[in-house]
Amino acid sequence: FKGSYTNTTVVLWSIYYSISFCMYVQIFAYIQVLWLSIDDNAFWNGAVDGIYTCLAGVMTLCAGRISISWVQNQTPTLMVLILTSILQGVIIFFAATSTNLVQCYIMFVLYGGIYSFSISICATKIAESISEDSYGLVFGFNTFIALVIQTCLTLSVVSSGFMLTPYGQYFVYSCIYFSLGGAYLIKLLIDEYRIFNIFLFC
Image (cartoon, rainbow, N blue to C red; front, side, top):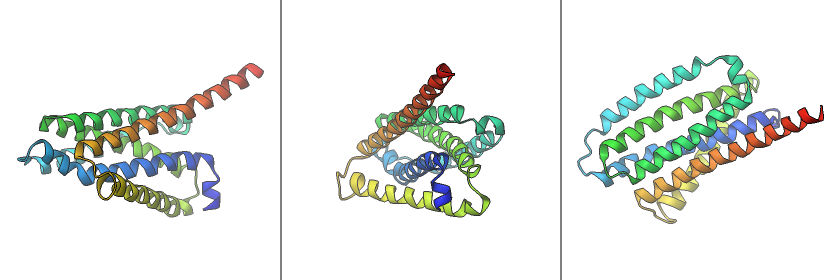
């Protein structure tokens, strides 16, 4: 545990993994409520879940086809996570504010596909930075942290806390994605600034 989590790369990507997985669980747990708030006769829910599953499989395969040398370079992978976080925030925001059920369905499918792509890259970055006998420990602990955050989010946003409407809940989720993308953008800018200073010094 100490050997894995003293590695800054593991910590960096584990934070993304935990928050992203938390948001995935939260969004999928309450998406039916959002659909019903838009239209009481939302009877295509099962078909939409099936379409999402197919797209998620395709996006995971696409992530697996990315060149290993590209994934090992931190700058482009950070860019992917920044862009996918912001894009997921935009998609969730439009899903929450939509009054058209079909549009909300499309946003849900797009969100699921992008999530599958980004979490695959994230898992790859973590796996390549730890020893094989640590996989279960690290991913298990990251999942535990995700579920702790998800429980706190449920208590504060959904149930005994603010008790927000479906729109309010998904607005909060979109803001979390925007914040996540912003945090990784700051990390990228700091790294690039250090590289630029080193280059000038040399």
